[in-house]
Each structure stands twice: as C-alpha cells, then as structure tokens.
Length: 402
Image (cartoon, rainbow, N blue to C red; front, side):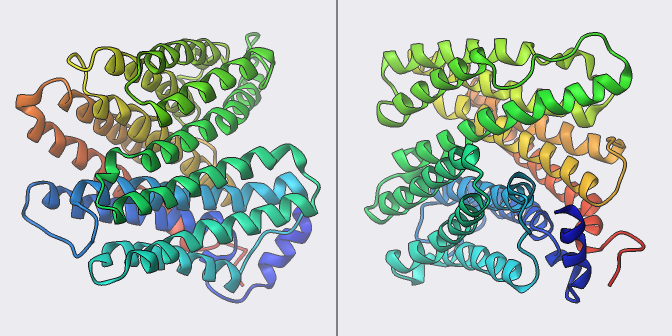
C-alpha cells in the first residue's frame, strides 16, 4: 500500500498541503488555536467583542474543544486509517473540500449572531459527519473491525458538539453543560485508547534501539482494559451527574489506575529524547486530571472544578495533540525523529499554559494575571508550531516535488 500511496501523492499536481490528511488539518489546527487565543485574551478583559451568538466563555470553550480538537482528530485519522486498513488515503481536492467544510464551521460559529442557530449547527456539524462517513467507509471496506471503537468515539464527540449547540440555542451556559463534558470525555477516552497503543509502542521501539534491558509492558493487556473501563465509567458519571460524590470517588479510582498504567511504560527512561518523553508527560495529564477532578468534586472549596478540568483540556488534550502533531509531521516528511530547541519551546510553553490556568483556580486574587500567562503560553506554543512546522506541512520534501 505504501508504494501505491506514494505513487498517488506524486500524481497530485496541486498544492503540497493536500497530499496527505495530516498536512491541512495539523496546519489549520495550529493556526486556529493561536488565532482564537489571540481573540480570547482581549475578549476575556472586555477589550474585544466578536459577533458570535455564544457568550464569550462558551465560544472559547467550543472553539478550543470542537474547533481545535476536531481538526486534529481529522488529521490524525486521515493519516492513520490508511495504515490501519491498507487502503489509499484521501488526497487532493476531496481533502481540500473537507478542510473547507471545517473552515465554514469556524466562520459560522464566529459570526453566529447574524445567523439562525439551526444553520450554525448544521454548518459546524457537517464536518464531523463527513469525517465519520469517510473514516467509517475505510474501516468497513478494509474490514478493520478493531478500530470501530475509534469511529464510535468520534461519533460521541460529534454528539457532544450537537448537544453543545442545542444548549447554547436554549440560552444555557453551554461552557458548563453536558455537551462540553461529553466532548471532553470522548477526547480523553480517545487519548486513553489511542495513546495507550502508541506511547508504549513508540517507547519500546526507541528503547530497543538504545539497547535497554527494561522495556514497557506491551499495550492493551488485561490491566489496560480494566483501567479504560474504569475511566469510561467515571466519564459517564461526570457527564450525567458531574458534582455527585460517587462521581468524585470514581474519578479518584480511574486516576489512580491510569497513573499505574502509565508507570508500566518505562517513561523514566526516555529523558534523552523529549519527542518521546512528551508523550508520557502528555498522557500523565489523564490521571492528573481525573485525580484533580475527583478532589474538586468532593471538595470544591479547595479546587475549582473548571480549573481541574483544564488539566484535561489543556494538558491531556493540548499537550498530547502537540506531541502527536510534531512527531507525525517529522516522521511523514522524512525528518529525524528528535526534538530540537524550538520543539522544546512548544512543549514547555504548553506546560506553562496548563499550570498557570490551574493555579488561577487556586489563587483567585492572582487569577487575571495567571489567565494572561496561561493564554500567552498557549499562543506561543501554537505560533511556534506554525513557525517551525508550517514549512514542512506546506511543502513537499526535496526530491518529491511535483
């Protein structure tokens, strides 16, 4: 399949960005993450108002979850599914059309004050629907039944987006609604499933090359499945009864299990390669977020639930997506799989953004400053990604130009 895929990409005579799924969607994700943060910071202080029908916080939450994460998921799946199924990737104008549908959703939500809620929802939901149809067709045609779970999680993520639009149209505070929790939950479960495959596998491959005697436990053993089921149960409770004591206890149990799961992957041996270490750090925010949410639910006076939730949205989702985007871009463009100084800046800026945002939920008097630091860290991370990786995404490697 690889040779046929390469032949198909060489036959494409259009823009290089449309030669593979990761190119338009990783680039668009990073640009939108930086641009939307550049809009959000002045919106947060009241300096700027955008023509959206959503309240400011709900627009922020929607675009950083469904707008940003949705396109990263697309880039990852449109690149990974051909490898899973042995079928050809989507390239060319079909890929470009899908990217334009995603862009239409962003524009519709941003200017939704002048549009009907139904039209805005239809334009925004068209993208995950078309993506699910494309991915589902490939999985079924390739008889790759093992990855139907990924399609299911994508469907739940889209359902969260639809529910978010419904809550916003009713006038609810959607940023704290069930739609957001369903979307975040689907994203965290994706990291649990997909991250649970790639982190130990990539770590094992690297440690074997280093001649290490200590190797990670292979992925998806019985303990991993139990840990994922516990996480699923905790997430379902959180979606339905977010401040119930049972939910808090379930989060603590799930967090502990996933901390143990992570400890089995030999992450402490990867400090010499930040491109690999960041996968372990990113995954660590899954148990950290669950533990923090458990504490916030059981003792909200100690830690604000919204701050704890950012360990998942900024840490697990933000850092893990950056880790995957940097690694996949380097690998698929023929670069060495190692993190340079610029890539280290990307990772460190995101970690700063996460901990500053969580700190804002602990020290309320310093919250305005900490929010600004967090937003700046996020902006730097994605602006640096565009600056460093944009050229790799927008151009074919030397010797592969049409």
